[in-house]
Length: 196
Image (tube, rainbow, N blue to C red):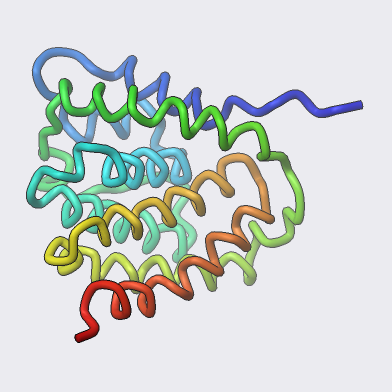
């Protein structure tokens, strides 16, 4: 019997839209809406913001990198709930741009959900999960500098979003694919963006 198609990613976007109120929203309100135990959901949301048209705003990639870095550190040390520095929680996001980004993401997310299902779940556990987490940690350190190379920050964020989607849907195959892409991002950016 075929498994029903997951809506885990669409549900995260639904929660994000439900959190929107007024002209802007605090990052801490997004965290509260998605839940302080939802590391994968928060990583998915913040990385998707950086792949959407909102990434054109100067500084967005750097802010997303800082948020993802904070989440990954806590996942590595085994925290059960999300903690964010106060200055990060007070950051405001434009609700108009956020909603525009969510609408833009609906179609690709809906398409991706057709192929996601729980498999190779051993890769979601320690020690296997450490390798992609450390690669993402390293990637976030370089993401603020990627703003000088057009679209490179969005590409990096998209790969992080794939990893988060794999965590959220317990799809080890997607984790493996994200791991492969994470390994190739530095070479690709150098070749296409920085090489003479």
